[in-house]
Length: 245
Image (cartoon, rainbow, N blue to C red; front, side, top):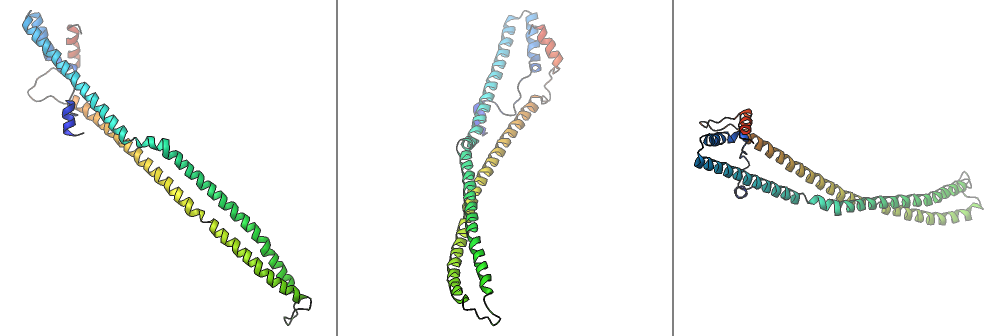
């Protein structure tokens, strides 16, 4: 809080509120005037007490007003939480759902492609093994194996081309990792921002606790030297009781 805002509130953070013991001297003087039947002095002292109480009341109102202002300011700073709850958290859930959907689709597509290519590769292996038995020790194919070998060579070209195409699709289907990674990084940034906002809220709350402790310390501070007052709470209660309070 700035110095100007403190001045506007009429109450400094370190100012101590009056305790009942602070009124003992004035009340003793008031009681003395009443016993002496000194009406003018009694009235003047009573007016002084009322003015002091009124001043304390104004200070309390100023303090509460300032605290309300600080609370509203803190709430405005942390209103980002409302945006998280209304917009960004649902959007983050949607992004994660998209990541799951893309991952599932890519996994299914990869499995389908592999299931399609495996039989093709196994068929080529079986035919190659079968044709391998048609060659003699010199590596010359028998008469019946020659046409089958020519057909096999043509089929190998087609099947290998199909397998190559399938493997290319497998590679393409794995591109989901880039998209999924981007979405996950966005969610991570959101979580980081939420964490920072919550930390700021905790810090604001901690400052409020420290301010309360400072005020309590100020209220119990020692009076200036040379100012002799009765500060016993029992004496204050006794005097107030004697006045009918």
